[in-house]
Length: 460
Image 1 (cartoon, helix red, strand yellow):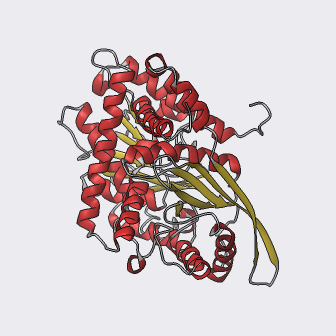
Image 2 (cartoon, one colour):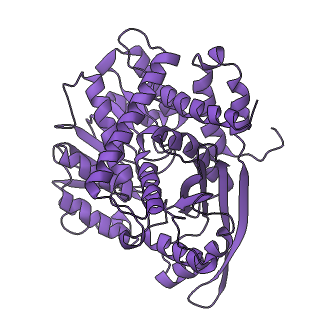
Image 3 (cartoon, helix red, strand yellow):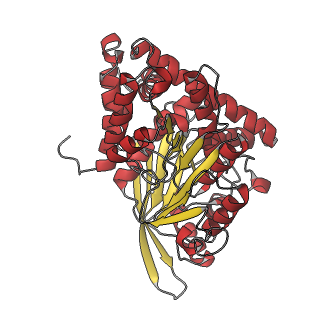
């Protein structure tokens, strides 16, 4: 495919999947799946369009809008919309490709897709964001629907943006349907949806800890380093604290806020950070004020990710964006005693970092190793509850938060067991060595999608 433009993020995601399939016994046992890989790696449809809107000064602005409808073998295309200046086709293809297999691992009937725009909501007024969303949805509404393609939020797309987008879809199509997830609670949203990705990654790691220690340990007493400070990081941190762990870092694109010594962020401090993010401000804007100005408890390191600054940790949860743990940082985490790393973000670790973690896992028996979980399994909680929101919309009913949380826990348990058992079958580890969750999750998601595509005549 040398005639294609250079798409580094998508190529990285493809190589990560392809290499784990090649290094397992999957293609030896099922050589026909090589053809399935070639077919599944090309999107069914890519939609690209201009978005023209007016700023508060009356000037015409133009952005690019995208929707990558990657695969619908298991259900309607499902995946978020990202509004961020870095958005391009390569990033959305990588995210959509990962989404196919993540959605397959939830066990729900959802295909894979992703979309967004290079529009930056930071520094924009609510009216500017509304006008942009109206223009964006005026085109996107021609290509989506409750049984066709169901977008959701992602970076830069909060409940406010989902509301503006849903309102414009309803006006143009004269139709109220579950065409977006992450909606407001009184108009079709699901309880636990904002918390779902963060809670889900912690539930997943709970199973990792229990398996590696034969049920002897839990989050209680664990030091947990988290990157990011958006929804995923906030709710992962709150759940870790609830389960008895200590959260020792949060961060954003401008720097990291790190605990000095043995303490932990408190729920109240995390609430202050959440409010700062709602106001679209950086952590740097609050580190000079109480309680974060207390130098005995906190240190703020500008321009740095947390991994090399947190000291001894037991668990690492990258929850900000892609490629936020490098090979060098992976080695620092191992040296700091980290035993579990799970991606709250999509493709949070570089390939060099994954290789470092996997090499350590294979060289060390059981709990002496670091155990890595890929985002397509560990952060599937968000899209899982989006799928549950779709189910509630179809039935025109709402479940309690306890019902949704119980279903989320079941899905994350099954996600872990599926990856674990598939790894034991296709990439059998040496005696005493933990199975590869990245290999197991990749194969489990891929084979489910490939089998459905074959049944439907997408490859033969």
